Length: 250
Image 1 (cartoon, rainbow, N blue to C red):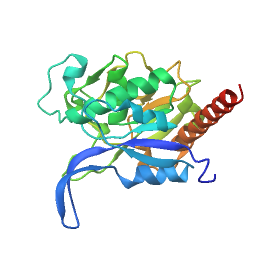
Image 2: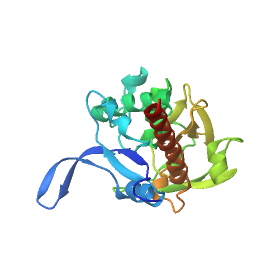
Image 3: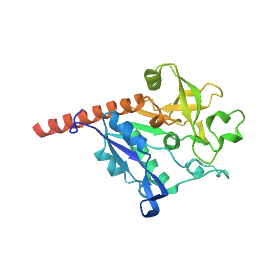
Image 4: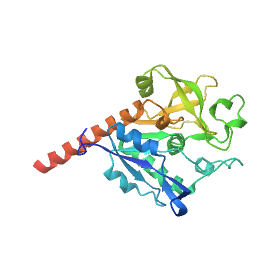
């Protein structure tokens, strides 16, 4: 795919204190694996830091959007009191929830990863399990320790879902999360952990491509999900170009 036709894929950023070179400062950043996966799939990655007012006009220049992993969504966003183990990023909530709502409304291709799936859920009127260790039998979703080390478990996919098209009826995924979807709201569950039936994937039934996954596909060998997102974004770019050409001739 040439650079001219590469669709622009926005990736929302973390906002964390980071140390690099001579800096130790608050930073908008994203794991490089997201950038690599989008590039390898044929897209052009564009980082989208959160804006307090949502900044939804940025979507006018994008062909697709990835909501990356990270901190928990504020429980007040879905009408609950926070659990003591919840770690939130109010700035990310303020910036990402409006982006997701507009993407869902306008048909912009959308992929939610871990936190991103939870943002999609809350934007769709759903609710979350705030701390899975409080839910019996769900210990396989994460590991303990000072650094991030993935657990693994199989996921079953619903017949007719996008994810079943990409992965088949079942796939083993990586896993590192202490929250999960309790009520998907207007989204449809399409993937479940085989050992505890916890929701692992959601899709929007009336959207060309709106998929949320609880695992981290950016750190998996297959880039099928990113390829699917980029392919959907190509269709958006072509549709925009065709509309512009039409109105230029009337």
